Image 1 (cartoon, one colour):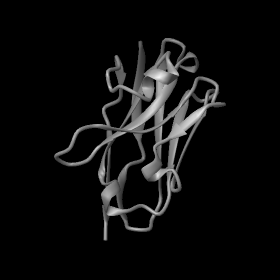
Image 2: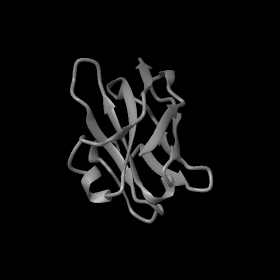
Image 3: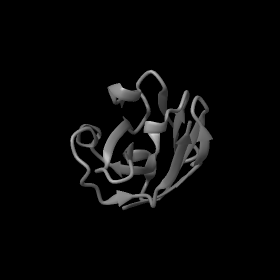
Image 4: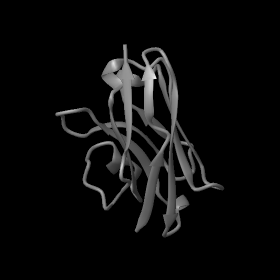
Length: 124
């Protein structure tokens, strides 16, 4: 199993930017696909973006595709989510997850490896 720790959240004015990081450790993190999910206040957890083990496949949900970029640096065992032009509706706790199966990350939230989350608050 992979251990995950998110960082980089905070409070930002609408139109601002943040870069979230997810540091992985444990069982060969570079063998795992990784993904970002978010849970807005009072809502269910939702998929944001995923990237496969070597970074050559990625997918970002349509609602944020023009503003969010997912990447990873396997030398640092870290995945990133660059968020630009943030909007109040991006306010959520952002979680990272890891799984050996990239396609699975696009269709479920049932994973063994989750981080503790990092909170993003966007104010207008």
